[in-house]
Image (cartoon, rainbow, N blue to C red; front, side, top):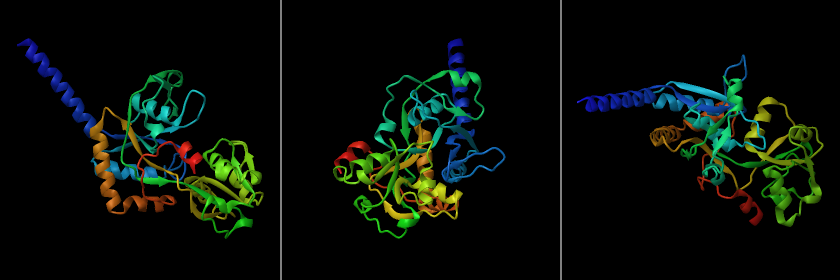
Length: 307
């Protein structure tokens, strides 16, 4: 009898905890400085496409939204994939938004533990400790994020239908970036003589382009959107060309909570069908492109080399 009562009591506790989790806040981790996707600055209202979308999903599944803001800083012991996994595995959130859906970003991590990125509310101990990592599982994608050619004032109006159309222009690119790999390897190095390498974090790539020092660059479309929002009178312009290899973005959660991913996918399907996801993009100043195949991008470096 006592064993039965003990088992019943444990089952009741587990059921109560599950019900609380289902009714509690939907906790979403977002990067605090990734305009126009997500922005969080002290003294200012939170903004961005991923903020609007997270609010809509939380409302759709009947749970209040709690955003856990974090700051992504790469070092030799970390990466966006490990940071997201650490935040989820530590219970800081149930979902990470704006996650690039690639094969590499979703594989089981080779490391068993990782450090947490800086996040709102972090203590000194949080910054020192390591977190045991879990396995990630993605939602369906909700936006496509490609690379785009951006033109300086002297090249304004130049028609770009392919990377080869950049021949003869003064090109600037950040060393070690995806754009760097694309431009340097194009057609066996045909563009190399026209490329100037800038140092990320030290040189102002888009500022140099706007001042006319260079004619074109290849960057993430969202980065151009962010620059245009911060500098409405900028002299740089969109070419309208998107490099054919790009990644979808979606949510990522832990594989141990498939019910949450199912609920999020249902909400995303409904919001997309109603045109609301595209509207959130317009409200946030994002050049919204719907997801496309492949849903999960394979080895991007091999695709670039083989083109």
